[in-house]
Structure formats: C-alpha cells, structure tokens
Image (cartoon, rainbow, N blue to C red; front, top):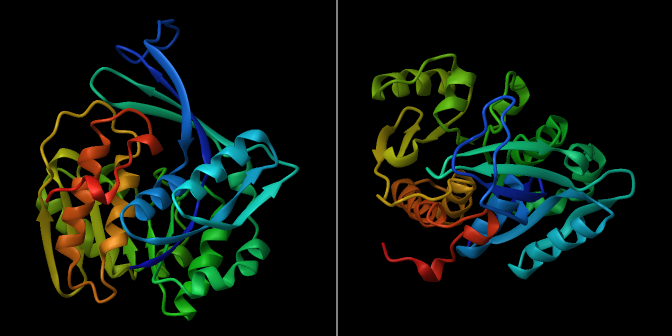
Length: 303
C-alpha cells in the first residue's frame, strides 16, 4: 500500500448541465444544477484512497459549513485530515462547472482558503510528507506551499508528482526541478514546453525539453487517445485509453493521477501497469456526472 500525501485544493463544486455552452451575452436554461465535493487536490486524494492508497491531506478550508462538509467527505474515504487548516479569515474554495451534452466542461474557480496555505503550515505537517512514498500537488493552491512541500520531499527521498493545472503562464524553476513525475494534459504540456503538440514526434520533443528541466518522468494524459509516458534516458510509450461514452469529463485527470499513484512502485518498474490502471479509473469517472461522486472504487475494476 502506497503512502500518499496530497498538498492541494478543496472546493465546493456547483455543476450546471446545459445542452450547449452559452455564447457571450447569451442566456440559456440549465437542465440540472447540483453541488458536491471537488477541488483537484481533494479529487486526487479521494481517487488514491478509493484505489488502495493510504492518504493524508494538507490544505485549508474556511471555518464555515461548506468547509466542514468537505472535510467530512474526505474522512468518509479514510483520508487523514489532520493537515487541513480551518481558517477564520477566508471562505472555503469553490468551483462553478458547466457541462454540455457532449460531456465537455468549462470551470470557473474561486480559490479562497486554498490560496492561504502558508509555509509554516507545511512545516507543521513535515511528518505527513516525510513518511510518504509520494507527494502530489496541483496549481490550485499558492505556489510557495508547493515549493516548500517538494523541498521537504526531496530531502526525505519522497517522490514528487506535479499536476500543472490549471495550465500555468509561468512555473517557477524551483518547483520544476523538484518534480520527479510531471503529469500534464496536452494543453498544459504545450504551455510549459512551448511546443505545439500535434503528433507523437511533438510529444517526444516536448518530453526531451521537460527532461532537460530536471524532471525524470513525464506522463501526458491524452483523453480518448490514452496516455504518453517518457522516463528520461530509459523508455517512452503510449498506453491506450479504454473506449467509453463520456457524459462528463470533470475530474477525469484527477482520477487518473490518484489511481495511478496508488499503484505505482517506487522503482517505477510497473509504470505501464499503473498508467493502465489510471486510464481505467478515468474511463469509469467520465461515464458519471460530478467530480467526487464519479470517482470509482477499486472493487469496481475488471482489467
């Protein structure tokens, strides 16, 4: 069982289902509106926990009813929430998700308490990081907290996994150099590498550039095309996706990362099997609506 610490975001998601996305200035009717737990960090933590990981969470919520409810949801999946700060001076983060009839989504995020995680708070939870096999972070929290978490991880020989989402205009060199495994989608990879991704040759060129920045492993989630991976100086490959009819792609990438991390061996020798498992988990998620309610348990798997 992998020990995983997630440093990340916790949001209250409001999902709005529509036939099509509204055009600027257009008013449309929704088919359905519902709220549930979300935030890339929380989603990834739940995916890891539901698929066999022993998970701890480091982050922050507001001292409000929404924050208490979201922490309770994490605890229901057996996640250690001792690293979550409850802040009086900030609201719990929130996200507003529009999903069309093709299963595509657009998301607006209010960071709230997620942006208030301090370096002192990270240091207070040093042990949660140092006793883990992996530390996972995304970019929905303030960058200094990620940098401090990865700094601790490096000193303790804990492998770091970074999901560079939302796609950054600038990613600090200190964070990149402290990242062992980078997991972007195509758009995020284009933003970081500066290379337009049109085919596998472009993926190889982008991978080379990412490795030059000091990242050992690159995994690119390609939607219905599967996942590309590259281990610096060793091997590259593409692991196919599972073909399904998607109704909502929200949290698909988060599910992949959490499920993948729950199965990856520290020596990386089973990387293709772990990626295949992550692909399967994501394929189950996109067949359901919402973020956390859609994330599957390992008992649902037949690979």
